Image (tube, rainbow over all chains, first blue to last red; front, side):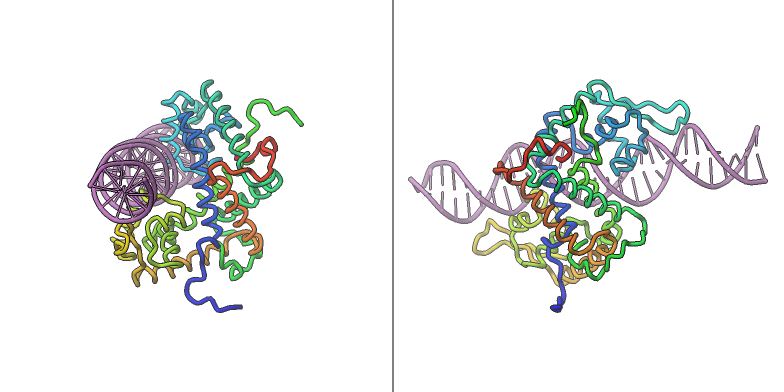
Length: 163
Length: 163
DNA sequence: CTCGATTAAATCGTGTGCGATACATATGTC
DNA sequence: GACATATGTATCGCACACGATTTAATCGAG
């Protein structure tokens, strides 16, 4: 084992940087197309969540897209102002706000999904690779979000070039 | 092939969302530790780039961390105001500004790298998995950033659940 | 039933990322 | 010398994202 004295970490070796920079690349790729639809990427994600299950509460949306209410509330208001979404207090529990897609919102979601489809063609991976990659990254995310999980046996000292 | 009518895209099936949410998870994990050091994550990345090669120009830093000068300039000024970095015009080519780590900046980088190391222990992947993952994601990023590359033979229609 | 604790949203302020645009300066080319 | 180009800088603007606080509604214990 070569002695690695001071700064053993190289930018291109870090898993977190790969994800950070890939996220930026996705944003750059999505932006011009989503701009035409008047959507931002997080807004698109929220529409997708509602497309799966309409009438989610703000908290439920947040659980899907990993955003808090302080981020979602203004975002949802923008979506509502644009007419893509309707916010309505739950009659049973008036603390909660239920969000539903409007017809135009649903149509917009269709267009946005087409954007994703077209973007998929640019990726330098096969479908099976993409699926494996997605699941691995999702697992990574979950292991980071877990408060203090019992790590699945990975020797921490072995992971010098991650993070 | 099953007919996939209107909204075949599920949030959890999308590769871009996995990356988006993993990036958020990394941010959440890094923030409390980097906060103690008075650094943001992109600032940390810039320090790392300078740790590899000191005296980079702004443009060179941008090439490393995939950020433009309009993002980097204010970031670098904050780093300079905090005393972690020195900006100096290149005497040979006065268009360029060369950025160098100060001693305190270099020390800070060490501490920040330790943060990454400790974080690596939380990841639910082996080292070999992490390396493969990192390379795959970096390849993804590069395929997205390429202007209009000849895609490596992936059937676009095969990639419905990516993007 | 009332009071206190808990929960869901909303709000406020701040920092930051990142794009668009405009502009100054230095370089290279004709 | 006049030109286009490249690069760094400054400004503006929007949208996140987080922390902390506030308000409203619900629930639970007494």
